Image 1 (cartoon, helix red, strand yellow):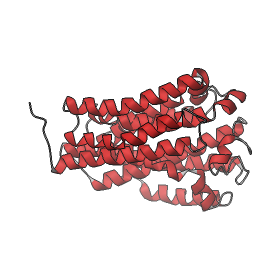
Image 2 (tube, rainbow, N blue to C red; image 1 turned 180 degrees about the vertical axis):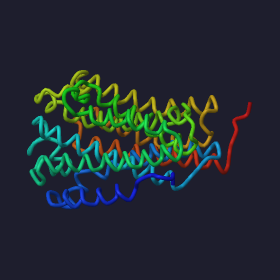
Image 3 (cartoon, rainbow, N blue to C red; image 1 turned 30 degrees about the vertical axis):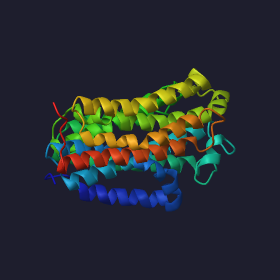
Length: 324
């Protein structure tokens, strides 16, 4: 741990902050508000960046755990802030589609909006504390990467920008989970900046964007009625469905190309074991889009990501080289 890092005073203030927050929102409601089922995406992004570093012989378990904890807090803060502004803007309310698919304490009035905003700020503080420690311990580039990510997280739903209402939601989450988080995780391990983790994590970012796209295709009618111009609303249902199929196929093409040019290990072709599931998702969109379109996409994303990460781990211990 870097000398002089003021953890104790921060810890005392933060405990008082959480005690104050608890007066307005119980722990269970706070946990549900964070949408913890979505954290598998952050686990995949952090682990991918770490594994790319491990392929070059660099791995520090404590740094990995701090980075993972900080990014989970970041993901939770993003989700909570998203709910805060969607309720504030009147997009999410009792009876809205999203309240039928998942728990939504803010929309159901289970917590006042002030406490929802406070929870988001508390989680952002955890992210900043983790980033500050890791930046001092490794490389100040960590703060740059996290700063850009925080800007995207806030502007995703915050006034006056509201990126998701400008058809930029999918692009924003791709950059955050497909580029910034893997890159930051790599810098934490190696102390250097490289394009390698971002290139390797392109398929992960695509799948995160696909989860959001599936959600927006399903809700296209409602989003249009409340003047939320998601990418699906702008494109229309048919073109959005074609984009979904294209991006899904692109995730596999990127892996195949990476293996062909030896940027990825041969083991990575194991992700093609998930192709039948991908075909099922494409067929899913040809009829009425089901309520569980995004969790089904997320389930395939997790399968793909786990196999992909295992392939990199295998390359560390059992490297295979394509014949010249």
